[in-house]
Each structure stands twice: as structure tokens, then as C-alpha cells.
Amino acid sequence: MGQVKTIETVKNEIIRALTARGARDRDARIVADSLAFADARGTKSHGLNMLDAYLERIEKGGINVDAEIIKVRETESTLVLDGNGGFGQVGVSALIAQLTEKAGHHSIVCGSIKNINHCGALAYFTLPAAKNGLLAFLFANANPTVAPFGSMEAVLGTNPFSIAIPNGDHPIVLDMASSAVAKAKIYQAAREGKKIDPSWALDAEGNPTDDPQKAINGVLTAMGGAKGYGIALAVEVLAGVLSGGGIIGEVNSVHKNPQTGMNAGAFGILIDIKSFLDKEAYAERINKLTGKIRAAKPQPGKQIFLPGEIEEGNYNAALQHGVTY
Image 1 (spheres, rainbow, N blue to C red):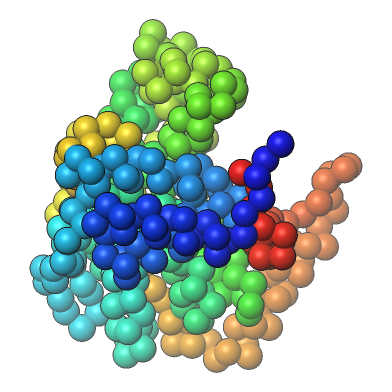
Image 2 (cartoon, rainbow, N blue to C red):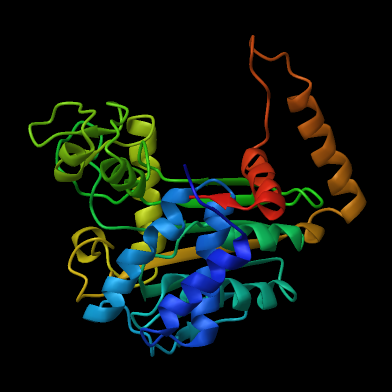
């Protein structure tokens, strides 16, 4: 049987673990909030599941707990930051916070941050922006684990992205890897002794495998074949090339070489909806769109959800009943 914990209990346990290893309280709270957020939404591959890797990286020097974020360059509507090897969540939170401030003066703003570690679930950053009326895009690159379409060699990362669309109190939130699955889910399956979908990965010989350990030692496939490969490449350009940070083999795994920073990057774009439509007109049009989607005839035994709606339901349930581990 699992153990049920409240979201606040999980946060406090993470904060204690991080601060005991030298993390600043303010940073530990951001990381803890991010991991608990993921667990509560049902994305456990990016929640408490990641804490051991973070702790090992702190102990061996891969996460700089004293990191100060550096502003590399800035214009009125753009921003480039250096995370200085610190927690990914802290760096990306700073990026989105500063871009949100800029969005109060400019219709469209964008910026990047380089030299960060694993930053958790990207929806953690885009969802609040959408609740504030901003259409939010966030892209992050990762270490090579994914083969370009037609290849059996890992060149690109899982390269996740999130898009959050304002929709009143219930933003439409897309948060996904550009690979067939997030690598963290492979590691989770290996720990739990479970098989994986053979479409997720290739073994060292280039054959589809349902063995998570063979997948870890092999390569992941791109989501949707050539389409996912193209998206992964675009994310690499935004989060890696434009940020001035690590690209492809220059980005390290969160689970390997814990003595070295991951050197990952992220790129964010915020669009102020009211620069294009007044609030009432936007609400009317988005409601028309979502209403039509909800009214579509469902397949037998199926229910139609908007992106992020299931996760929102999970989160609300977790607020009331806790999270089962």
C-alpha cells in the first residue's frame, strides 16, 4: 500500500533535505514547490522522484547552491541570463518573473537562461503566467538521449516544451517532451521493475525494446517520428543555441556525472493577450473554441479533455486528499 502525504508535508520534507545540504531557504522552497506541484498533478516522474538525483548533485558539486543569476544582456523586450550552475527551477523562475515584468510594458517579450540544472515540470512556470493573462511558451533542452528520425544514435535531448493559454481560472496547458516519452519515466519504470511501451526506445542494436534498462543504455525515439524530431531540433535552437549555453553533447544528464553541472538552457516567450484583443472579446472567442471541442462527438467510452485538464483535476484532488506515494 502507498503512503498518503499532503502537498505541504511533501514540500517541507524536500525543503529540509535541501537546506540540510546547504541550499538557501528561498531556493529550496522554489524547488520543493515545483516537485510537489508535479506530484500533485500526477506527473510523478518530475516530482519527489527527482530529489535523490538533486541531492547527489549538490553533495558532489553538480548543483551550485550558492549560485547567483547573472544578467548577460538585455533590451526592452529581451533578456539573456546565466544560471551559474544553480537549481534549474530557481533560474527559470527568475527568467519568467523578469519577462513577466517586461510584459507589463511590451506586447511580446522573450528571453533565455543558460547554465542551469534540471528544472522540473515546465507547466510549473507557464501556468501562473497564463492565469495572469499571458500566453506563455517555454522550451528546455536536455542531454542527448533521442535519435534523429532514421538514426539509432542519441544526438538530441528529450527537449520538452510547455504552452499555457489563458482561459480564465482554468488555463489550457500543454507540457510534454518532444521525445516519445520523458527520460525520467524510463528511469521510474526501471526502479519499479515495470516494462515500457516498445515504441518509446531502441536498444543498443537499434531494435524497439520494452526493457527500461535496455532503453536507458540505448536511445529514445522522437514523438511522432519525423515530426517530433523536427520539434526537438527547434527546441535545441531556442534553448541551446540562442541561450549561448550547452547544445547536444555539451549538456549533461541529471542522473550521471553528478560532479558536473548539467549546462542546460531554457527559452521563454510571453505574449500579452490584451495587446491583440480586449479581455471580453478574447474570452468570448476562446470559449467558442473550447465549447466546440467539448461538444465534439466522443469515441465510445472516451471523454474529451482540454490539455492540462486532467492534471488540474489531479491537483485539486491532491489538495483535498493528499498524494499517494
